[in-house]
Structure formats: structure tokens, C-alpha cells
Image (cartoon, rainbow, N blue to C red; front, side, top):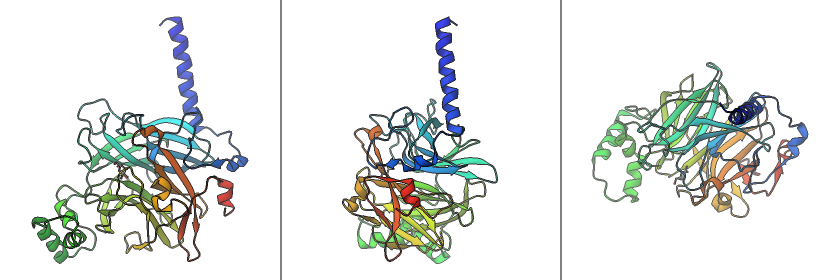
Length: 392
Ligand code: GAL
């Protein structure tokens, strides 16, 4: 190696090691850094001064640190050219770039081939296996949004590298929990019938009765917009995703190691057209916020609650309040973070920029409570973690 090349190589290696170390070592951030402002919609520079590139993401709170995982987006396409990015922080305001947690692959025909669609990654920690488990929505390269698969990967360290396990549709051959033989027979006959035009009253009724669920029984259920939720009440994990051509949400239990489905699932709000699910627990109630289905364009958020994750789920009014609340302040939900050891929650959303995907922005707002005890998301130009801990 030439001396110059050697010096550059040594410097680069040192930087790479320093970069990794910054992700795992104790940070210089202090308690007072909880006074740092969180300003939704603005450019959020990381430790290198570069706007954070982690869209449709979620946060893992682990060992006194936050790890933010999200889609890396390039300047001109929303397809995955890099993979899932990871950033770490102790105060939710100062973020260190930890590199690419799950990389796309340069192999023709590979599920994760560069140019595939890899969206809405979420990571959870499994205490039994001590592995970090990532779930995401995967669309195969060149096939639009037709594959509608989940993907799963695991790692030994929060920031990765993640090893890809597999992708697929959900639970082929398995009916929703509690579906009677009579209801299954009806769904099957609807799936074979000519239902005529979509969006008619009878068509809605057929979707509600499970005709799309029956249609997809052989392949497994479609899995697009998604999140993974570990219930703080008992440590059990769930995969929550848009299914049935984005018409119906599914909540599916995960196995004890969190890497596969347990076999039990329920359909939520059939024909309700919900995407972008985000969920949290407050006391004995589970709250879920979703969006409607208008692609990258914002729409009005929806909210549901249940006492049991498998339902019944009750729909409520849009939780957003204030200017532009009917368009979720220009964003679309992606995750709700509960600050560990507290009952404080942060609503997280994306302001998409389809013309310039890497410039998409983030909305993070505290969840507060209305007089009648329901979650509210109020626009704030600026707030701090200290405000949230002090009840805003
Ligand atoms: C949105 C969805 C995004 C992405 C987009 C593609 O509705 O929430 O995750 O899939 O559509 O148009």
C-alpha cells in the first residue's frame, strides 16, 4: 500500500471505529440537554450536521439510550438504495449516526435487492434470546406494491448489523381468531362470487365479512404499513399491519422469540382503510392512532382504543387538535414512544416529500389528555423532554 493510501485508510478506519464507539459508549449529553428544543417540521441535523435520514421509523429504548431506526431515503427515489438507518441519543434531541443497521443487497433476485421498497422498520428487544428483532414492510424490486410482505431480521447489538431472516405474507391457511365455521364458509363463498363494483354498500359488507381474507388464505395475508408493539403489561409482542389491499388492519401475536407469528390474529376495522398504525398503553387501555390511505399526501388521523389487544376496538375522533389538525399537521403517523419508566408518550409522524424523499421531515409531539380522558396531539412549534416530564 502507498504511504498516502495507508494514511487515508488508517484515518478512515479510525473514523469508522470512532463512529461505532460513539453509538455504544456513554454519551457526553447531560441531564440539562433535556432542555433541548424539539421543533417538528424543521431540518434535524445529526452529529455530522446532516439531516437525519430515518423515515417511517420507530424508536427502541434500551439500556438508557434511544435508538431510532428508519428508512434511508435518497434524493430522488423512495426505493431502498441503502437500507435501514440507525441513530442513537440519550435525550431525543441530539442524535449520533450509527450507520446502516440493515443493508440492501447487490444480488439480483434477492428479497432485499437494492431498489426494493423497504418501509416502516421497527426494532424490539427480546429478553429471552437477547436479540434485537427488526420487522419491516418489504416490496420486491420492480414489482410495485404487489408483494405486500413483512420482513424480519435480527442482531446481537441494537445498532446492528442485522441479519436478514426472511420475508413473506402472514400465516397462510390460518383464519382470524374466533371466526366460526359458518363465517368462514360465507367468506369463502364471497371470495368466489362476482361482487361487482368496489365501494358499494354490498362490497363493504363483503370485505367486512372477510372475502379478501378468504381470497388471501392460500398465500397468507398481505402485510404493508406496519409496527411492532411489545405490551409493557406482559412483555408479549404483536405485529400490527395494513392488510386486505390496505382495507383492514391485522393484529397478529408474535412467538416468544419475536421472530415469527404465533398463529393468532384478529382483523380490526375491516374496510376502514387504515394505514400507518402506531400504538401505546396507558393503564388498562391500549390506544392506536392510524392514518387514512392517501399515499404520500397527508390526511386526517384516526384513533382506536381497546382493553384487550385482540379487541374489540372502538373508534374515536381524530386525536389531533389545532391548526391543520385535519391533515395531521401535514404528516402521517409512524410510531408512539413511551418514555421508559413514565406514562409519557410522544406521537411521531412523517411529513413526506415524494419529490425529494431525503428531505422529508419529522413531527414529534407530546400526547396530552382531553377532559374526557382521551389522548390528544396538539401542534407545538417547540417543546422539550423536560416539558414533557413536567406535564408540559
Ligand atoms: C403511504 C404509506 C407509506 C408508503 C406510501 C407509498 O400510504 O403509509 O409507508 O407506502 O404510501 O405511496
